Length: 211
Image 1 (cartoon, rainbow, N blue to C red):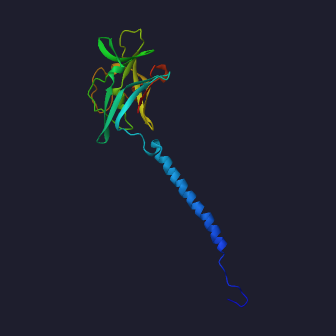
Image 2 (image 1 turned 180 degrees about the vertical axis):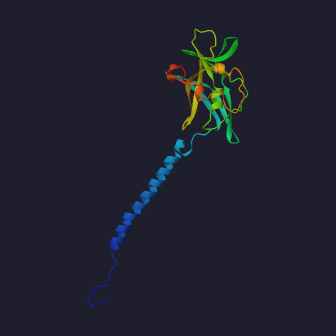
């Protein structure tokens, strides 16, 4: 230190000021991080995608806001795929005798009858392949004035997995095609080329949901 030079001093106010600025910034960062984690934890659709497990309710929903519970489906892991079993609540249906066959039907502006898939199948699905579940929930529609079952008036609910469950959109299909057993049960008979897109609102119950 040269003569006449004052010894260097530490500017305490700078440290205090620096600490006063840095500490809240650090706390603010932690607060935002904790808030983000809390939002994710409280949003199952983001943190935990809807999965194929447990017993889920099946409903059919109409253009007028009608919601008709029709049964449940249970999912169980089976290797790389998931096995399922559909249980329809027959108390929700009415027995119709159409074209020498008995059908379980729902009555409304039109009559919607369940058509059980008649052949052996593995009854398994994946998130990307819901074909066999779609085949377990085939229907035909008719007007209340019609007497017979016209299988070409089939309703096929094309399904997809969403954050809130499975959603099926009504498509048109000719159910006469499953009268004979397929050569193999490796894949469902109806693919995307075998159904026809329609306006779901053209059907009384144009949407199927599993949640």
